[in-house]
Every structure is written in structure tokens, then in C-alpha cells.
Length: 232
Image 1 (tube, one colour):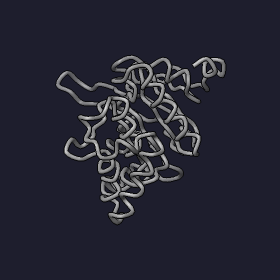
Image 2 (tube, one colour; image 1 turned 180 degrees about the vertical axis):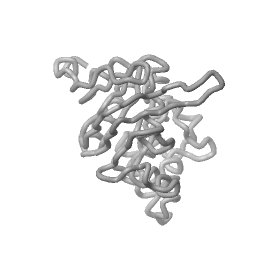
Image 3 (spheres, one colour; image 1 turned 45 degrees about the horizontal axis):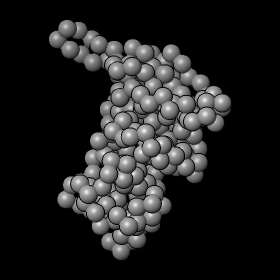
């Protein structure tokens, strides 16, 4: 479980101190998909960066279980992001010169997994998301929806506890977006914590919980409305 206590992030600029987040208390549960929503500039990306340990708060704490991310060294946080966190990005962030299975296998190599196992696990993940027949295709030969599913397969490469998805449906048509959303819900159903930053109303309505930000403050934290999920 990932949680925050009185999380605050301030940025110092020539014009003065700018608060990006102020006193955020939130819990992200295992087995649940939580959508973080809010207008541009509300603090969504800042919160995601703090939750993933890419940045440190000005004050407050991010906990993974009972461990404070701020008490870890940068090397320890990097290892955490490699082995216990997975990431899905709006722009896919696939390596252009690698084919689909090689992209999925790439973080396994960084984690020290042997080459034969890397390939077998990568192909199994692609098969899971209906992409086995596209395994040897480079990203430019894949559709947007296929690229995002490769990105999701890569996020699961090292069997993470937490999956972060930053606007995962933002560059997709509605049908591809539904496929990716369904895959994220399936991942959460396996007992992982899934956190999605989104402007997509459909994603928010299908989430297990919603955290709404405005000007760096939590304005709403609730479970998703069951009726909305059944209609999605």
C-alpha cells in the first residue's frame, strides 16, 4: 500500500515560493485502481513524481508499506522504481530501435535477469495483451493502442507492486483507450496498486477510487460510484 502524510511541495522561483502541493493525505490501496484527476496545474504530475520517488517533498512523507521513500538513498529509490514500481506513459516511451519483445525485456536486463528468461517472460506478457504476433515489430510498425499495450507489458516486466500510468489513454482513440483501461483494471485485480493520472472521464468513472486535486489541495477523495462503472 502506498500512502502520503501531509505531503507538501514548494518550488522557489524568481517571483517567490510557489506551492505545488499542500498537506496532501491520501491512501492508494492494493487491488484498486485510483484515478488522480484535476485541471492542468492542479498538482497531479507533482504528486505522481513524489509517489514514485522521482522527487522529494518539501515536507511530509510518502510511505510504501511502512518504509518512507524520503529515508531511502537515491540508489535505493532507483532500485525501487526498477523492481517494485512499473510505469506507463502517455507518449509510450518505447525504445525506437528495439522491437516489442525487446522493449518489454529491457527492464528485466537492468534487473539482472538472464537472457533466455527475459525473452520467455516478455513473450508471455505480450501474449497476455494480445500482441504475441507483433513481438518482432518495432514501435513505428505498431498502432497507438498496440504501443500502449507494449508499454503496459513492459511496466509489468519485473512484477511490480505498484503501477503508475500518466494519461495512458491520452493519445488513443476511444476503442483503444477502453482496451488499455480494461488491461489496467485487470492488473489491479491481481492485487497490485494502480494509480492513473488522467483527464479522461471514462477512466475516472471506471476507477475504484478518485482523488481530485485543485491548486495543490485535495478537494475530493471518494470511492467511484458503482453505477458509473457499470455504465462504462
